[in-house]
Length: 151
Image 1 (cartoon, rainbow, N blue to C red):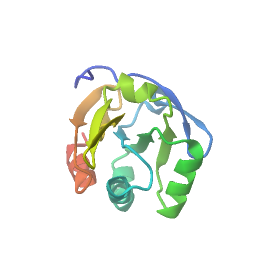
Image 2: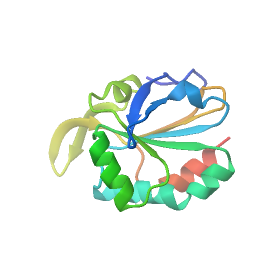
Image 3: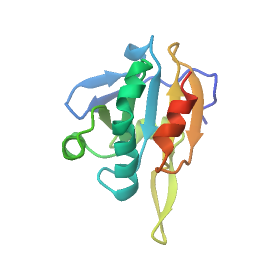
């Protein structure tokens, strides 16, 4: 399990634009790494749009916002375009990074249990350490809570 104060696990994932994003390449600024279950679903859309609407404030504070889900690059590209999301979405189709961050596991939805991402956010400081781990969060109001937690 990821612990606050420990180094954030480094990774490389493909972005919605097909570029490779490496977490360690973003050192020197805070990173908001949020994991969400699926593109273009009600809760995930609410969360993404709240990050979109507050994006200028995140940038003013020097923070990079990255959304991660198991969806592929094509799905991310459509989701990003449809909702005019200004931040990067990362594809983790084999859920390697989600597992490394401890957010992949059993989920209950509509009375069924399945394996998926448990909605969570990690604020990573400029030195690459976990400043805050926010696990099992609710989508609505989450972006504002993250802004309050930025160092």
